[in-house]
Image 1 (spheres, one colour):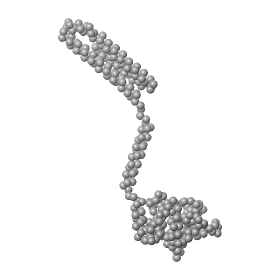
Image 2 (tube, helix red, strand yellow; image 1 turned 45 degrees about the vertical axis):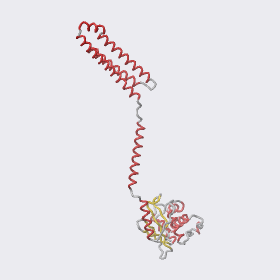
Image 3 (cartoon, rainbow, N blue to C red; image 1 turned 180 degrees about the vertical axis):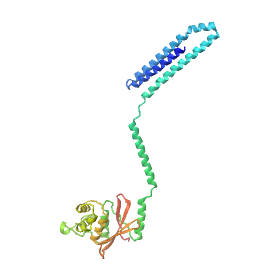
Image 4 (spheres, rainbow, N blue to C red; image 1 turned 60 degrees about the vertical axis):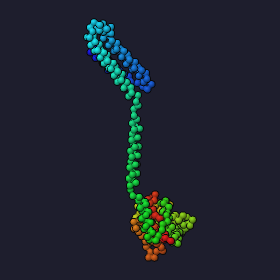
Length: 305
């Protein structure tokens, strides 16, 4: 009996190995047929092993033995029953274990590229959420600057006229201040060489041309501060939306003979003097670091009514 059981266990292992190999090599089209074939092999082995067990124990001889030997026959019957039960359990285990690879074989492998993409999206979303939380806890620099600037110009008896934030704000703010002070924006500096600056031209374009012309005619005052050829520099001033800064303010103050005061939200006032003992007017601009989309920005500060 032990030899038979050992043989049955080896047959079960061999069959399980064959089934696993078949299912691994199966394609999507052949998988159903392979599964059916494996099921048939399991059924045949089960029937053959049951037949071997029946042939070994012998049902008819076992009946005669029960009659002749009485209680000893009952003991043999119990042993045979236990042996049959063990074989059935082994066969069931074979069926279960053999079917396990089938489940693995039919499960699609995870797409690693999609998994990496999903992880990356999750990480980016987490970073964006963290940035939003940090930004929420940061002070509102725009609002702080706006409130501080209002306090500063109000205390000086000024009000604010907002200038469009488009790269021309410095020149437009100067033109606005000149007009409010009753001064002409058009100085006709280039009238003898390139024709007078037309009055129909936008005011900021006029102040740009005045700035470019003054720097060209007084290049010795500006060349030490330039990092590019003079012609290219003044062309940008005259024809593009290049921002203006300290050099342009100097040129404007001297060209129009006015002093220009630049007020910041901290209360600091930077005064650009025209160099004349008798300036025609004193202009006021507000200068912002954070309050507009392009960053640095100038507004006009006329006297409050």
